[in-house]
Image 1 (tube, rainbow, N blue to C red):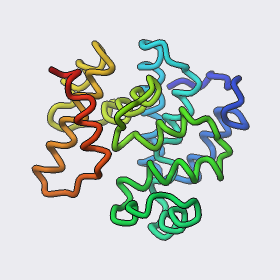
Image 2: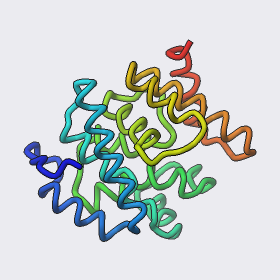
Image 3: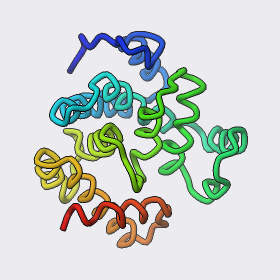
Image 4: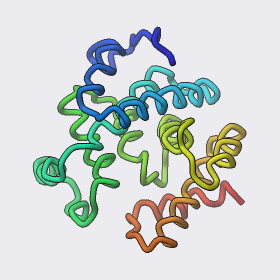
Length: 200
């Protein structure tokens, strides 16, 4: 685990240790350990793909900041920040990224749009994703404790080509949702359509 990373870009108004402490208060132990693993995976992917390591650390740590908030918090935030009303048709799986970014902005004072977009899109993906967004999207999917059919292949593909990793996840996620009769957030379909050519 990286413990000596010194934040110097003033993206978060404090040290890494202070950010970690806030997350430990906001999350249950299992979820807290997950975000630490995602941070470390994000740092590794960032280093391999010439992506800002400090941003990768921060985005990896905060990507699930709002994951365990009650539904009422998200519904209030959708209304307060005038977000797309269609979001009300979905639940925490979508809210904790898309709406969670607004809570991060206002509660943690993180205003960097690349970091916030990495949070917004870490479950749905997007038609365009910056290298940092791709890093967080994949780090959350392949962190060391993830264990599902295809995860080893996802790790291999991502290690070889980050963009192909994104395409792989978009395809697998859509297939999982359809196979299990779950609603598909429109942006996830857009992500698949935009990225699948990278996999061919």
